[in-house]
Image (cartoon, rainbow, N blue to C red; front, side, top):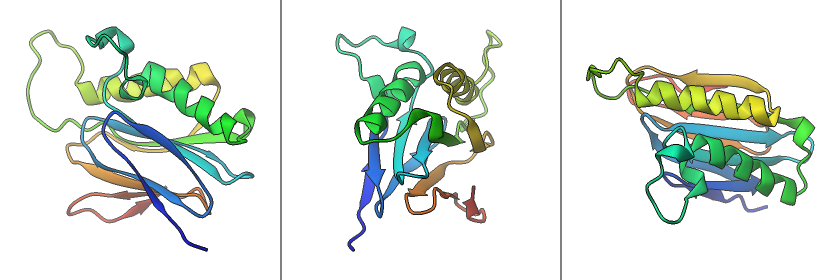
Length: 163
């Protein structure tokens, strides 16, 4: 059986089924959120760039760009493939603070705001977050294996994590 690697870009999302894997590169302050239905071996990944659609300035909304619109859209696409929402579990990585700027307004970093917004969206959808590798000041690349549901997290000068 041939295995494909499905790539998800920045402000993008997609789904994969066994035996394929799904990956996104270069998560900095962005958060990669994965969904996985272990009985159907269906996975989804969203590369969330910003916390809320309230920040959108575009005439046409890119749902994949924002936590509050990307995660419901990812769930919808997985259900279309046969995933059962009550069996889906989430994992996420990213949300780093890549630059050491102090915000004079005292607002949290965009990475922290992305992490928080993703967790809020997951609670609204009723999807449990079972593992995470978030924060810090380094970029990450993640890959989800549909056979096992294992999320591999790679970062320069760090050991590979399997969560």
